[in-house]
Image 1 (cartoon, rainbow, N blue to C red):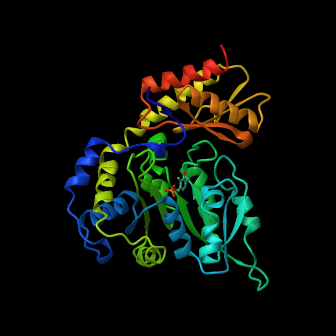
Image 2: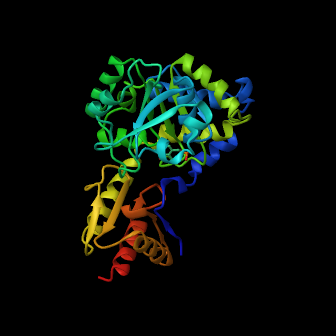
Image 3: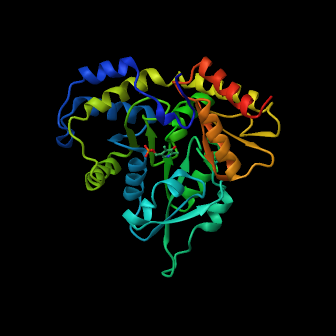
Length: 345
Ligand SMILES: *Cc1c(COP(=O)(O)O)cnc(C)c1O
């Protein structure tokens, strides 16, 4: 029996059309700038996000890292959310690679609060690091795929302008926000100097992320990509599925959002269940149960796994489930049944 894998949308495999384009894409050496497929993907990505230029990189982590490296100087400080991917899950790269001091702040509905920013910006004082960058995340992974609206971004951008700070958006799932809000990603990206997004999650590509920004930033980013060992050669084979994803894959994300809401509705009926956020805003939800601790969730993860349904236990938060292209209505029903079985109703 095929597993229903809700651990992440990173588990998606390429579509038939992607495989076909991988086989047929014109190729060149991208370090020489000669790969036409990569060049097309970079141009299409920049246009879609309303930026001057874009850089194809292997991972979202590298895209964020290059953004931080290009928008700061060593010894600077960046403001970001304490539950952001950059702060929690990127191996401390900002300090290790670029000497940039992360200053974590609470997330309020998945975003930074402009008052926290105002009170955190350092005065011009030789004792202190220089505050130079703000990072946001859309959708916000650890806030359960929360969608950040233009209204939430505006006061942060205002604070950044007042204090001459740069802004970077970790948009690993930015197109989920586009679909959920029904407004173009470029509009959600407008206030940011740079934006990263992943092809390798809900968009079903095997590999790949883009960093979009000014021509100058991206030119410098190309140097940092080389430094990090991310200069790749006939990488049109990986850019080709990215082009398919951007032209064919975005509207489909609405199906994942619908199934995520259906999953939430059914799980909410289980005894002691709490869904977060409720209702889910994109393709991610957390479910917690009264009187469960970390060990209880790990057991639950194992019990569901034994029934062929994989989710992730995340500490005291409960279980995370992520909907994606490879969970159809039947897979959704199997997941719901497995939860019912282990909660024995
Ligand atoms: C997955 C993810 C990343 C990093 O992407 P990788 O390709 O796994 O390095 C960055 N930010 C967020 C919010 C993510 O979910």
